[in-house]
Length: 450
Image (cartoon, rainbow, N blue to C red; front, side, top):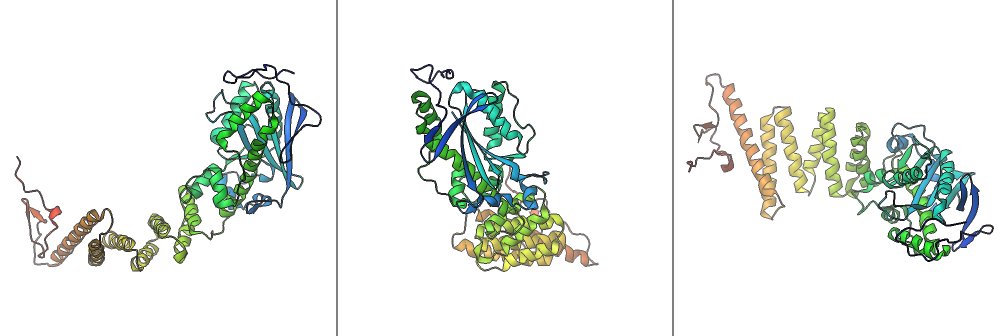
């Protein structure tokens, strides 16, 4: 049987390499065994492995991916509450490049499924380029029996690339309309603010407890396959098979981890609560978002100051949006009285002043709160403060001046024997109202035009 056409960039002396042997198959290191089976479109090379449901990949057992709560489904796959992950296919591909397009081939496809009380991994291997159609047909047969696809960045890379290969082989794309859960997007929602990267390898080490030993880096995979096409030594690909198998197992573990976080109970880590709150708020689940933000603030000292500040701002926005004014006032009062965190105290005092001025029309209370914020600001400014302090100070002085004018105007209006008063400016000059001069930056420009 002849091999596939030689790509232009490969310098191979044998234009007709022999296919992999049949029968005993190929024994790769680490128990890899590739069997040659007959598919409906020709010869297919397949490696299989099985694990019990109790097998732990890192810190999670495989069966935990089958225990997702309904609320986790609503977050991960909106509108598909009937999704049966017990029949899902966990898919990962290895390719001849990362650019995609018609010039990139898929030479190894790993599909993991829960079957017969365990987890089964099938790895379809393109031993000869001419047998791509047979591999794709066998892959389609497996996917047709699945209820969903689970991948990591499959929506942008794996699935479009597979569809391209099916089209070029004149085969219908498999499982059209099959629900697709791409775990990259939930991972970004949950972890992008706490991890340096949302690559699968980073998530494995930081969250799943997976430590790969002697793993083949992704950038080296295409080169190893090209080396195989030249040398026909399949044992050189053992590390690629391992890499693909670990990716599939990590998909299952990541689904279990994300399912646990999104399963309805409040996470122990305030950073996870904040991430879930952001996610729920973006999707319009405001009640759930409010619960998560409140949990961050109730976490006490275990929550980082930046995490608490972000949760407080978002919770205040939700309270205001939902019209929960009493809770909004209580939120800012608690922040204004906390020890340390002077910047957050100033922010809280200003927020309370805004409520008193615009919501309750209590200008005296708003003026007192603004004076407290300005005193705090001046004390911190003596020690150097932070970037943007001068601008904030000017804003506080401007607010205080405006509030005092409003108080003076209210007192004048309450005096029945006094006629209407003019505004604070008259013909470009300041009118004395209560003996209070506005800050210099509030005065009109008196310079003569050049």
